[in-house]
Image (cartoon, helix red, strand yellow):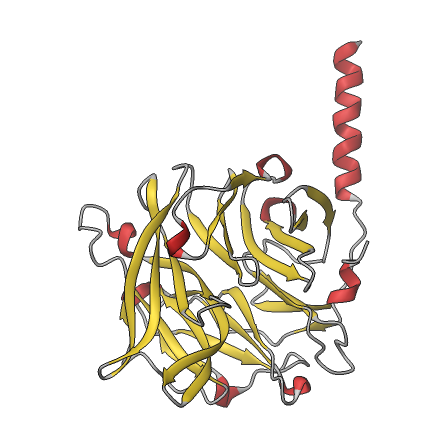
Length: 342
């Protein structure tokens, strides 16, 4: 009898999970040629309605058929802002106010080009390359396992006190300690340079680490140790490499993937993580990382996601949440449709 009761409880729980109401997107983007992966949002602060959503399209492992596509807020591809002819792009991120010289600052798009073992850096919105063809990463990883040199995830951190900008990069495989590398992006002789400042981050060895997100204001890095949970570290390399938290694993079915941070000025907000195996998203409090809720946003097998709470015109007056969908496209949800204030 006890077994039957327990089975009934489990069945009921699964049924409730399956019956999560779907919050439908208001925009579905045009399709990319190959395989979408990760979005990034650039907010045009002079004209918010002309903000851009960037999305990676992975493509082949050894053919230059990959790209990073630019979309407007109606989901249409912007050809002149898109970057193609790449080999196996994975993740992307945007940062504001990178110093190029004493008088010039620019917003940037950073993404991993796994097929060439490098990260790329472009200015936004003019989409000019700033990296002289790319910055090689994990160059000291040795040749025993090629996956140790294959970049996947990337997030960019701008220290609000110093203005220094860093790219944090993950890879297809790596050691149990020092899985992530952090590079400072700074002006140097001949242009922008990427200098390695630290190696950090634990890895369970279970699957891989791809998704990374940075909370610039509070100074934390979060990353998904897939099938295990979310790990948290200081973003400022000067504060050390201690793991601050490891949470959420019990709330995921199979892979925990993309991470987006809904950040309010008072320090409140949410860490939003794709629950890929269940086709939904888990929400954790930004201040203490406790679990809050799960939402079904209609996507399937989501890898990356991103959010901004800045107003983007009449279509998205309180911000925008973007998530990858496995039909070679991205979904747009108004941020207020996620009930972030409850």
